[in-house]
Image 1 (cartoon, rainbow, N blue to C red):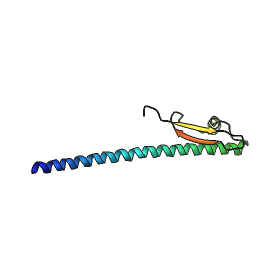
Image 2: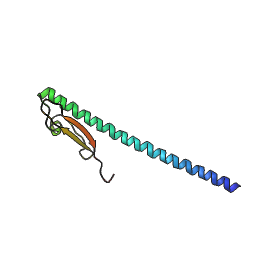
Image 3: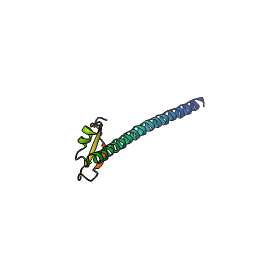
Image 4: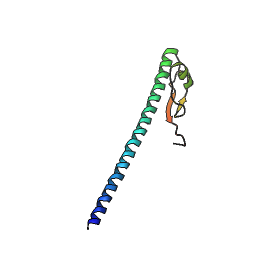
Amino acid sequence: MRGNKTALIAMIAFGIIVLANIFIVVKFGNSSVNDTATQTQNIEKAIKKAAIQCYALEGSYPNQVNYLEDHYGISYDHDRYFVHYRYDGSNLLPEIRVLTAFDEEE
């Protein structure tokens, strides 16, 4: 009878450890995803703000995001993020999207 009780306690302890590990992985995994999403949104907002500032100061939107990097202080990690910047004319706000670039190693 004592052996069954010990085995039951060991199984419960093992189950608690497994659940705790799952909780930790989910918690920190979600945190990383949320941080990346927030960073992506921040980069997108900064580029849009710089484009609008350029339009206000120079009278036209830049035709490339590189112009904003060179003249308006925009910087981001080109290996981690891809910026879709579609220019439709000097008086139209460009379509701006920032995507996360995932390496195959990760």
